[in-house]
Length: 320
Length: 145
Image (cartoon, rainbow over all chains, first blue to last red; front, top):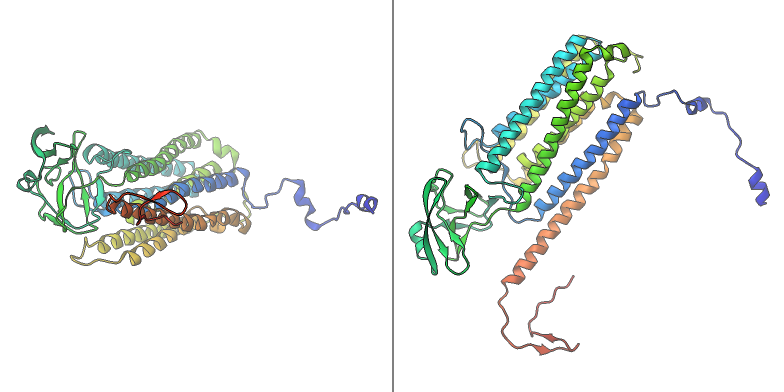
């Protein structure tokens, strides 16, 4: 019986489509290179998804989290209290560059080198503007507001309270008055003589006190930062307990800089690839191949993907 | 590249470009608009619930993603097998997102449990021996899984 099965090999059946196994056909009607670009982008999508899911899990695990329309409300030219305006501009730039690269791909299929180069250059300019905006945003967050991968001064209040005036702070027991020059200004605060806790008055970056000294649960705040020093304001809870505003969740800074940085690195890599391919188009390399400038189509896929990732980075960090 | 069919005309190309641009722009502005209105920045004193804002913004973002992949990246016009080989693996993320957000929420509840325990007054009573022979306060709170 065992002999029987060993001898009875399945017969070589002849199907109509047996020739498909002989190679040389494209079942997906797409070239190897284009298909592999798609699978690279698929794997890259999983990398980004992993980061964004980690962000979501950590955010869900915290009681307090910075609210985006409070954190991202600054723009160049000294614009303040303009929630999400600057990042909307950045998103607009990326959408425009996605459209220009689409034009480049279309012109490539028409074998129109001049058109390809024109739209590729437009795309490179768009990507460069986006990166420039991101550089400004990071600089503002790090140098002005004091958000780094180690520290995050943005948060939301987990309880209602009222900021203390300097007079009220001076009545906190076991504290000593300290006068210090911070950022060229004379700042007075009180420090606990036992555990070293510093009690500051609430002030913005210009040193001005807030209009409303009391705050509600869930309202946003920014711990003032100057020259490496965080000035945590003293407040009194409804039960009368004196506390200082805590720093926000550390994970916020690390996640923000890592994820937007990873996206920005993709934009930068895209600019390099776009530039190389534009030079190759200019040299006539792809026209000789007579495949409708397929390399332009591949870099177009990559560039659209960068825009696609931004849709979700924008959703996770700036909208929600 | 398969040149089985004729290339689209300039008018057809421009139609895709302009439609895509306007669509992405409007959906993005709608998202920002919802965020600003919902958080009380545009109409004074008017707020929207997070339970409305977040799902709507997620749906709009997914629509943008679908449009970019399907039209700009042309996947909607490739063979069905190729489109499925890209789209089906992505469905794994549905599990990933639900599982890890659920997990994050569980961490938050555990943090709360620890915080609440730390707020309990320190017991100054001497400890007594319990049934198993170890020392224990009368009112010790035990963690039960």
